[in-house]
Image 1 (cartoon, rainbow, N blue to C red):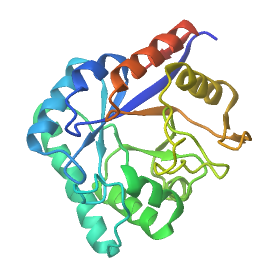
Image 2 (cartoon, rainbow, N blue to C red):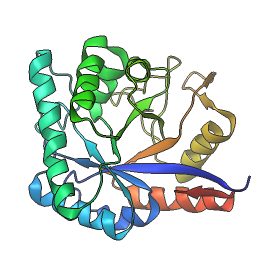
Image 3 (cartoon, rainbow, N blue to C red):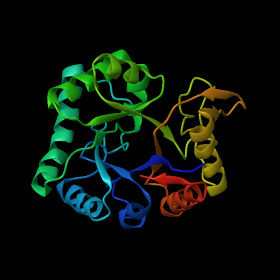
Image 4 (cartoon, one colour):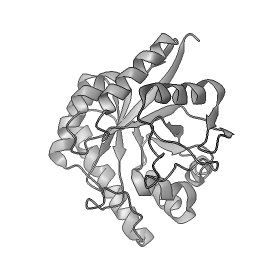
Length: 246
């Protein structure tokens, strides 16, 4: 494999403080913008780090729930959820405008990401926010999801995303974090997981089946204690295969 590229993204600005260790090995980042984590100070700090390392910047909105880190579904009226998501994205946009930097993408967080993948109302709410912002920003979405299909129908540019550090069910949903096999924490297993998805467009699910999947960007969660080491190893191993992280 030569002259191939892929995007590695990481969720950051979530209060972990490891962004300086992660930035050299990723090509795009998803910055928490006040829903599950993050505030003006953390956004400004991470934006400057991304600028230094020439990493593409994305907004990482979530359900407004810092207590549960955005990992529980909130039953919110669509109009309330719409306002929350838009406010979060605009808070990061204001900082990017000051820094004269573009918003490259939007990537939902946690329970909001998972809900938009399967629920029409949630997905439509996100799509309406994207339309209202009138920006060329892409939406990072899982392959064959509800939100991916709606985005394509509404001419919202997308990038298919898969997870480097998460296992999959047969329906391409992520294994629940309540299950012991939800996370991939071994660097060799993570590399094999990503390389197989990238090179064969198939993912081995937890039942041992192979399912079709498409991905242009792969996420490693920045809140994992070993995230910097795992991301560095993944980037180096991909380079050895002639795949540039870009």
